[in-house]
Length: 120
Image (cartoon, rainbow, N blue to C red; front, side, top):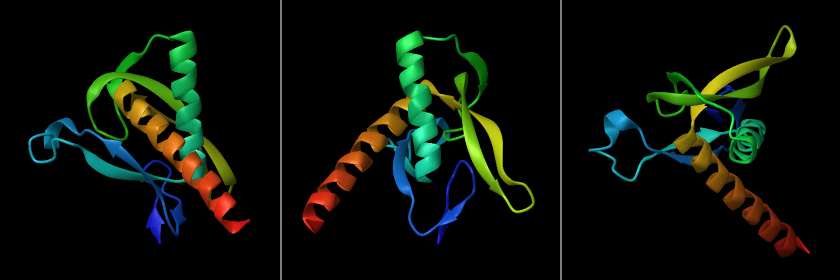
């Protein structure tokens, strides 16, 4: 079992998202992998599409994935909670991480389609 890096939900496998961490860019110039559950991936990808379509203004903050202090956009997550079921929580992601999420989303959906065709 592994945990989603945004909501903390424990699941058997996470979806890898490439993240460029500013403090680690000399050691890892191609980025590091963060793992997201499908729910968080969908929420972040929805925000990415909204940012590209409507171009809302970002605000200064710290990105929850890469830790960079830059312009961030709010992503609404559904976090599992033992006492309350599902709790909505906002996290901040920078545009670079949202773009990485979009790439991971497309890759994940392609893999799911290929798996469906392999079973038929």
